[in-house]
Structures are given as structure tokens and as C-alpha cells.
Length: 102
Image 1 (cartoon, rainbow, N blue to C red):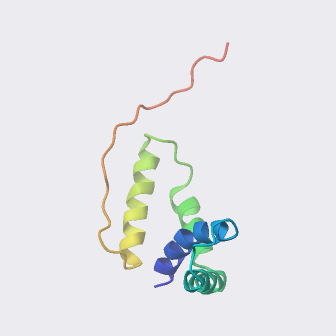
Image 2: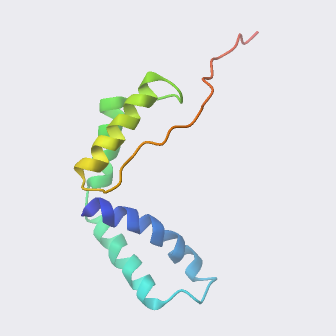
């Protein structure tokens, strides 16, 4: 439930930012965003997710085995948090290697 709230908060954050310049945003939406923001600040879920990713998976350069491990971690975590339709979409990525600096 908290994870869903955090995701909604991200979506509403942009609306809140635009609220000062876009008067068409309804006050109900702004109030909902405020409530979500307050609830998210009362939770340590974001910290626990960040800590888990950085300590259990660690550094993850694109295209590496650690990148795949991070993907698997994220799928597992989202499923555990109750998200629906969690899936991995394939895409091509060239693996970067450092060249000779001289």
C-alpha cells in the first residue's frame, strides 16, 4: 500500500510543481498530492528500498551481471509489495568498456 502511495506521489509531484503556473489543476488533486506527500514522509519505505538495493545488489553498470541482478531484485521487490503487472521488457544495450586512457 505504501509503495503504491509513493508511486502516486511521484505522479502528483509534477502536478504540484506545475500548480503555480497552471491554474487548471483542481484543488482536489492538490489536496490528494499533499496527503500522499505527508504519508510518504511518515514512512521509511523509500529508505529501506534504497538501502536494500545498494547493499544487497551494489554497484550496477548497464549491461553487466549486476545490472541483471538489480532487475531481478526490482521485480521481486515490486511483486512483494503487491504491484500488479510487473514485467521485464527486453531491450538492446551495448556494453561499455573503458578504453586506454593514453
